[in-house]
Image (tube, rainbow, N blue to C red):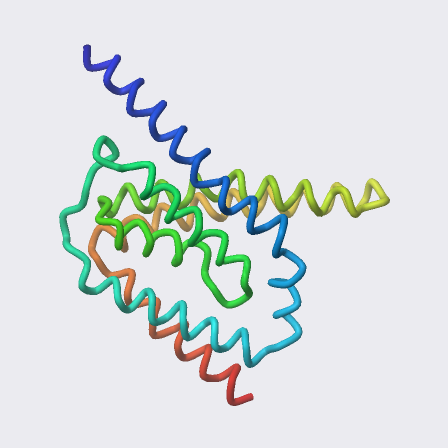
Length: 188
């Protein structure tokens, strides 16, 4: 009986990841070039870092106890997916946006971290596929795939540390770094 319930929860988790990937994918397809144009505007990127800092800082007031996976709704998944879509904008932290969105939806802290990480996989694969289509040599493809694999490995290591920080309710501490970097980019 317990195994059946675990399988049901795993299937629900997978479904929420697919559902959350839809707004991210649509935003990436339709607004990618517009969002990427921001890279040439450092002051705008600095402003987006300030917004990331503010969002992270606001997580200070999120309740310690959150909803487990069994109580997560489809609407929560959509909101987290939209947050990830906005993270295409340079200066908006993808993990910061998705974890914060999950926390604001009232989800369990550990669930927010795991969901954020697993949600990154389809986004990274989708972005990689879009870039692969632009490449004309095997060397560039190998470089891209190697970089993707390394980023995935580093992401797993970072997630382990990040989940501990999230469980303690200390993700807001990253807000100071984001705000400091944002101010520097605007000034310089």
